[in-house]
Length: 316
Ligand SMILES: [Zn+2]
Image 1 (cartoon, protein in one colour):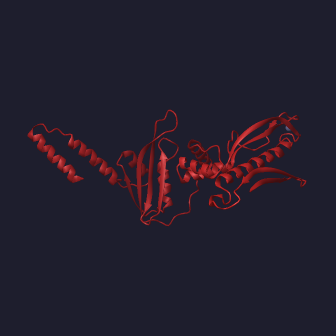
Image 2 (cartoon, protein in one colour; image 1 turned 30 degrees about the vertical axis):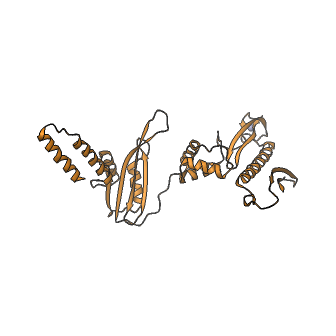
Image 3 (tube, protein in one colour; image 1 turned 90 degrees about the vertical axis):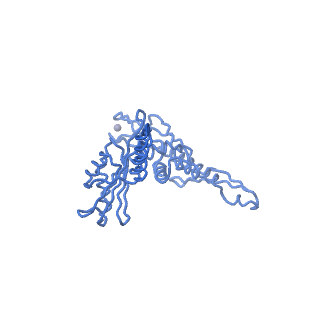
């Protein structure tokens, strides 16, 4: 048993034009459950086929129009054609579009309001960014390829690039509505290094942290060092978001370095930061190593070393 999926276009005058999109064949019985209905592969092929036909028809109609010149109001004529390859959620499409020329004032009109060098539709960009926000770029790329007939732009690096582009075009968040005032807030701040993907830059120093109230309200923040982001402002904004008021007791936990201490101070946390367990343990580990490497030449030194090793162990 077989079907032919047809796409029928209806023109402005009601004229109909039919195109075969796809042929679907199925066994004559349902012995095998897997043959029930459309498979994912058939669904993807169908979507890609319909997308190609609709895009081709849209391009034909678009190319037939002769827009008025925005400069002098004269009628434009076709100057040349440009081929555009575009990734869409339902497959890669090729669109051949005219560029227009006005004889009156000699200007060239693109005829479309697309951003220059655009290679994908806004919907695909948005979906890629949304997926990338929920999972790793690699997983997001695999998921897109599994579910949709996307045959371009499923490389993890492409997803990363597009996610950043979408992020850059987002408006800065407006101040959130004031949260209920918090009695106490704990600020945790630490720094680490991530490998840079840019050429000539090996590592980027990143400062990350979170603010937390006793009632479970929480905000995380992070910024790359030596960029336009003001980390103190970031912390202040996070504190306000979880309900910092005049009377809120603020406590900071850092790794003990003076740079981070200055930062929390600039953010309005004026008490001495507390060293968190992780960094206390790191310092003890360092002490253990030093004690273990002490010389034990002669009975006096050996005895001293034994005492030090024991003390450090007790401290832990
Ligand atoms: Zn003109």
